[in-house]
Amino acid sequence: MKNCSTLALPPADLLRQQAEWLASARARLLRRVAIAHRRWVLDLGAGYGAVTAELVRRAGGPVVALDREVHSLCEARPFAGAGRVAGDAHRLPLAGATFDLVFCQCALLWMVPLETAVAEIRRVLRPGGVLVALEPDYGGLIEHPPEIATADLWLAALALAGAEPQAGRRLPGLLAAQGFAVRVGLLDELQPAAAQRFDFLRGLPLTEAEQARLEEVEDLAAGLPGWQQVAHLPFFLITAEKPAGLREI
Image 1 (cartoon, helix red, strand yellow):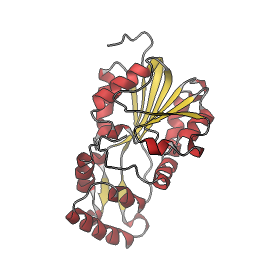
Image 2: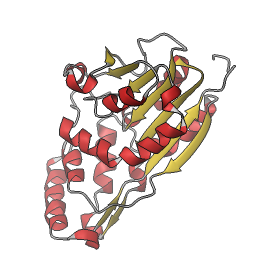
Image 3: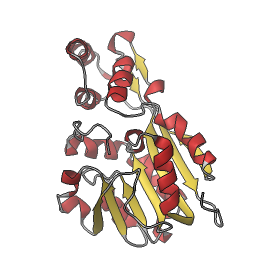
Image 4: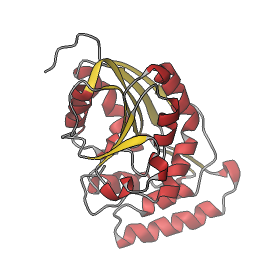
């Protein structure tokens, strides 16, 4: 879900790799909120359905996949067993108090302004319903050695594309302000730097100078095996419950 209409989703295979990388953390969060007992589930910002089939398999009832990019919803196989809806996170075409669980993975950072998206999530959740969100924070990107650092490229390109690159750190406060009971963790495992991170960055709006610098960084990183390089993107792992009896604003 992107405010920048000219910016396409990353390729489906990259999104699947990303989903696999986050699988363990995602499984812990979904167990924590007892997904098997959640009767209506919304996959918000579903993209090409990288996680939709998992939600269908684990949920206790129907799953609806929603994305602003209509073309991403057209392939049937990733969404088998799920309903599909095209819509904007800031004006969800869904009735209030419908869902027991709203799931977002690397999607809320594109739902700017975040305040409006959070208010819509709150509206469509039933009392006692819960948001599960896995969202990055590019302001905390850890890179070593300095020669392979790209944090400034990420921050500038994401902001230019209409995203909130520090969505992770902003979400807990925004959710609490909307009355949610919030629980936050951080991705606690550092993995070897993956070259695919450059593929994601290349899909963002970069100047010619930034593209040239990215190519130089890629060449340098390719010559650094194993733990001779570090690239760690912090992920905020959030569960936020809408308390039972919470009045609508």
